[in-house]
Every structure is written in C-alpha cells, then in structure tokens.
Image (cartoon, rainbow, N blue to C red):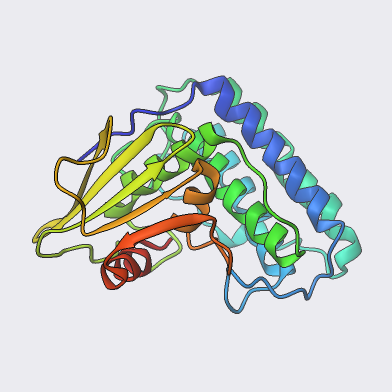
Length: 260
C-alpha cells in the first residue's frame, strides 16, 4: 500500500484545520439552513454544518482520551440548536477546542482510526481534508467559487488514495476498486505532481511519477492542483477546470467508485 509522500508537517495541519473551521463558520453565516448542497445529494447546509460540528467534537474526544476503540458518535449531536441563527455559535463551540487538542497531542500517541494508522498523527490530516471538502460543499451551495492552496490540494489527493482501501466510518465499507489493468493518470500542472493509478484484480495501487507515464494511461486528467482536487472529490461542478483525455468510461467509473 502506498504511503503519501507529500504530507504537510504537524503544525501546518493544525493551523490549516483552524483556518478551515473559521471559513466554514463564516460561510454558515451567509446562507440559509435549507439551502441544498448539490455536491452532497439529499443534504442541506444545516446537514453539512451538523455533520462537521459532530465530527469535530468526536475527533476531539478521540484524540484527547487517546481512545483505542471507536467513540460513540451520535452523542455529539444531542445539543444541535433548533434555530439556524444559533448554528454559528454551536459550530464554533464544537470546533474551537479541536486545533489545540490536535496540536498538543503526542503525534505518536494512541488514537483509534478506521485505518492502519492508530496514532494521533492520523487526525490532523484527516480533519484538514474533511473540513476543507465540506467547506467547498458549502461554498458551492452558496454559489461561491471555492478557493484553496496547491499544497493542501495535493495532500488531499494523496490522502484520498491512501484512505480508499479502508472505506470510511460513515459509509458501508471500502469501495470495490478491482479492475483488469485500467490506468488513470492525474497531473497537477502547477505543482508538478503526477499520480498513476492502476486497477488490478486485488484492488487499486498508485504511485507518484516525476513526469507523464512511459506508456499513456487509459484516462488522464490535468489541471491546477485545486481544480484536480475538486474533480477527484466529485466537487468540480459544471466547470471542472481540468483537461480530460482518454477513455471517459474508465474515468467516470474511477470517480464513481473512488468517491468518499
């Protein structure tokens, strides 16, 4: 299994978690509770904000308590405010302790996760990308063009590819990424980063390349890191800002099956 090689340092993760939490809280104050979120079908802005507030609190408890088993999740939604006007304050209270908890934890200390990394250093990275992706969801719901930085975007793609074999605690299980040798090439043109993904009989593998693969992949996507990140996360919208070549069927299948 490939381990990400473009990871940020611990303090950068913690600082970016705090920044994204602030951006979410700001966005919540600009839209209505019942605003549909196109990139999260069946969800409204209230649903996204509730999910994030609960997640932040859940991870805070997991890391603070050095939990070695999953902490019961639904307890963190028992005080969700009935009125949307109170959501910003509630979200802030849920999220405020998290960056400091992540920052002060021993990165090598124990903390349960749904992956093979059972250390606290798993969670700053996971919380950056969980919060960033849902902030993008809220931006899109508000009709605002999402912004981002290339480093976080590249690391977000790395993390997604790492997570896929494990699934997600709020999904039914890991996706079926078996194939017969199909290949997908992702190229972040502004960051000079290439990913080559292979779908084999036992699942997917991936690697970083320094240039285009020697043999063209069956499907290729090129674009700025932030656009490529949104595309891979199915958050691209009608104007993805990326160039696609090769088999559209293979690319569509990969995006559908790799979606978190």
